[in-house]
Length: 381
Image 1 (cartoon, rainbow, N blue to C red):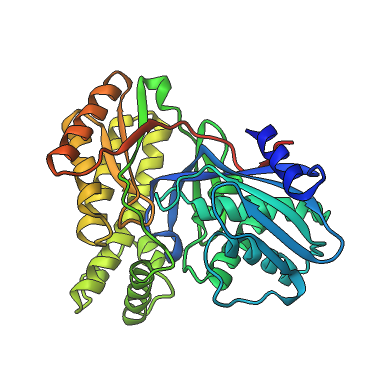
Image 2: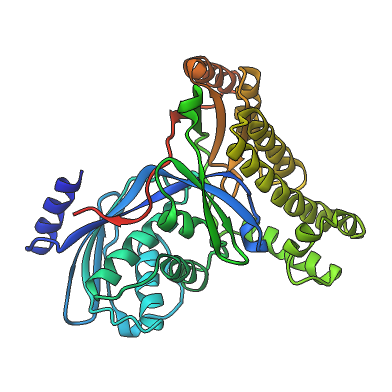
């Protein structure tokens, strides 16, 4: 894969790249829609990644092309500003803008992007792209940027250049996750802790179930949920819903007069509790308790936060009916992927059951695969 990308770069620009960088997508095991509420999340990095071949320029221009997508990028870093840019190249120019705004002397660069994270599947293809580009441009500039700082610059690009109001989890997972572990991330304090996550050692498998239903975070539904949480905070007089998680004061949430705000806030407060319980279960090797937390999370996302969809619900129900220890949607919702923790010996049976349940409804079968925790962003050549 890397060699083919190097050849593609040479064909496009008539020279060899200085290097190749990768950043992975992620699966969030539990802790959904908590990151922009200063809460807790528990992602793993996945093997699917975005690869970027790059070489510096000395004229301040950033040129980029994609193996998968049309539309090349050719911009001058000094003239970049948030605007109507859309599509994959906006994430590239947005990262260059964020780095330059932070004082990184981006010299310009030629880039070829090879994106191997499924788009719109809730696996954070955008953060993988941002972090791979950020790592490449920072290295080309000779800038030593700490991993957390790189993640925050990538989020800045997505929030303030692209215009998608996402939290920090995706970028942190892309940069800081490690193989064989989940990453407990406290968004408020920015503290992280590696939590062992090796289901295969217990005879289990984590299935990622891609429903084929696609979403777009820059659209309205995701932003509506964030604004609902902000409105709930104003009414409750707290800076973030995390404050209610810390105090265990779920009763205050129930005083909200608006039913929608009450249910949105209830999900966030209880989800933070589930993340910590899930980490405790993993530390203790209690996979049954961990699975129960996953399933409870899905119910809350479906009923209180209302970000699931029929395809996700069917995937979760079918996996549980086949003996999964736990299952839930993952990612921002409205489509994308579900995950299920199943006995490894039942993987084929679960996959067949999912295909049958989808066929009953006239839907194309989901794409199902086993996922192992992977490493975060790094230079690979």
